[in-house]
Every structure is written in C-alpha cells, then in structure tokens.
Length: 469
Image (cartoon, rainbow, N blue to C red; front, side):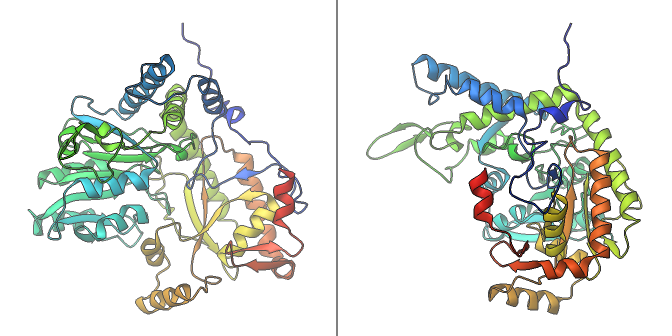
C-alpha cells in the first residue's frame, strides 16, 4: 500500500527557508513571510536533495556512451514524459520542449509559427509582457478588450474571431493574471477559437502551481494547442521552462537557435535538421533543471492539485475579508465573486497617501514580510486598473525614460503559495494597520533608493547583510 509522504497539511516543513530569519536586520522580528509567490516560489527541500543526489551521476546527455551519460539521458527524457502526463497532453501528437522559462518559450513559439506581417495574433490586455512583446515585431498584435472589472471580454473575442476570420493565426492568453489573480475560462476560449479555425496558446506560468491544467480538454474541441510554464513558479527554481505543442508544427522549418544537438547531419554545403524536440533544444540542455521540475511535479501530484486549490482559496477568502478592515485601502481585484474556479490567491491593492513602493518596503523592514510592488511586467493592464488617462500614461513614460521612477503609478501585490498560512495573513494585516496609523513617523526613518526603487531605513547597509549570509 502506498503511503503518502507529502500533503497540504505538512508541506510547509518541506519548503526551503520557511523559518529563515535574515540576520543583521534589526527592524523586523520573527521569521520571513513570503507573499511574493507569483514572481517565484522557494524550492522544495526534496527537490534540492534530488539535485544533490543526482549531481554525482550528472553528465552531458544524448550520444554519450558513458554510463553517466546514459543515466542522465534517461532522467532527462523521463522528465519530458512526466511533464506531458502532468498536463494531460497527448504524447502522440504533442512534444515537450525544455527551455529556460515561460518567456523563452513564448519567444520560441513566436518564431516557430512562421508568422507574416498580415497575420493577426490576439492577446488580452491582462497579459504579462512576455505574452505581448514577442508578437509585436512578427505580426499584427491585437488586443481583446476587458470588462470594467478587469476580466476578459469574451464577446469581444468572438467578434474579432468573426470579423478577422481567416487572418487570425493564434489566440494567445494567460491562464491566470499575475496582477489580479483572475482565472480565464481557457477551455471555453479554446472551443471558441477552434470554431473559427484558430489555434490557442495559454501562458500557464501563474496557473499551473495552483490548478490542474488539462491540455486535452473535455473532448468537445476545447483542447489547448500550445502551453508554456516555468519551473521556478512551481517550487523548482533551477532554470527550466516548458513549451508544449503539436509535433507537426515544430518539425517544420528552421529553429531560431541552431547548433549542437539540433541536426542529423552537416557537411560543408548543407545541413539536415533533427526532429523536434531535439531541433528546438540547441546546445547542452539543463538536465538538473528538468530533474528538479520532475520531482516538483511528483510532489504536487502526491499532494493533489484539488487540495492545493482548496487550501489557497481559504487563504484568499481570509485575506479579502481581513483587508476590508484596513482603513483607506483600495483593492484592484474584484472581490464580489471570488471562488476557486475564477480566482487565484493573488490580490493587489493600495493604501491612500502611501506610495506603493514605500508600503512594500515598510512591510519588508518592519514586518519581515515579502510582497511585490509596481506594475508586475503588465503595464497596460495596471494602467487600465488604475484608470489612467492616455495623457497620464504618456507623462509617466516620459518620467521613466528620463530615469525618474520614484513616484510612478503602481500597486502592492500579495500572492500565495501552497505553504502559506492563516496566521501569516493575520500578522500581515496587523502590520498594514500599524503602518497606516504611523505612516508619518515611518517616512522620517526611511530614504528612497533609486537602484531598487524602494525605501531603506536610514542606517541600513546592504553589504553588511550580504556578509552575514
């Protein structure tokens, strides 16, 4: 009988740095609370251990006849198979390409689709820059409109699919917003896209550590054609990313990076490309990163994604209800209809008369609580949420271009991992209230640091902290 080692109830003890207090910082007491999981998650200790154990056997993969090379090759290909199974991808039709991260995956896809300047790729206004910028110089990038609450306007999506019928080559959307936590109905979007003979790509970077991703869909033509995600957002931050899509797409054409491992044969006058994924993994691949991802996937599957979903929804509901008790707070996430199917544990807000970067700094130094502030690599979306006019956006850009970033608009973001707790939320909200009541005294104690675009205590010396590590 299989005995489960990992569960949502005990996973906290398997998270690296969970009880870490950063020596040398006298301003904050207690252990570090990480509420910045949407940016990157800490590694699971078993993942670190797996890498350490395997490092004795590591060798360059493919074509090597040494036993370590054979072992490493088998591990690498097992990681590929595990990843495909994790997202319920049809391995006969799809391939898993290992890259560095989601950003590289989307850039690769943008090159490999053989787009022309007349082709249209639809993206939403809620996208991370990584699912917007790669399309801009290869085709006509067109936005899907948003509703007033910041969610995707599916009526506008269908209108554009109808109107530009044969010109739209791809609908490219995020599975979940890294700013508001909104989950898009990706299978409904997929079915709608397929009705108009258009493929769909889903950026799963934010979604996959928190919800089950099913590439094959339910069987009603709602499958996902392409997906991408990063291991560093799913407790394995060792440089691995994933792009999954149809074999026939990637077996065509020339890869954007060429070199070792991408070919069958080369002479002085010609070259013959290998099949993908090898063709799309130029150079020596990140075997340790792939191994780390595989181990993280195994642990997530043992815990159960439904258990992760349920736990994080409890945290989200607790945070939303608690934030309502904080004076002068404004939430930029619609809280009227939060449920596990349409929202992740990502909440953004501001407190009146406190700059977002100062508030994040005070939480860090006074409360030892890590959050993120700014525009989260989603400038158009944050501009829309803040209801900035075109003129205000233009003035903000001008200031930034001249190096003035101190007072640019932004938000404060809290984002949960599966290991966070109710007590951490209580402590966080208490600090918010404390900061709000004493903001004038704090302002005198902190000075702005342009290099980090945040505020440091007046006597804070970063070099002393680094020496103590």
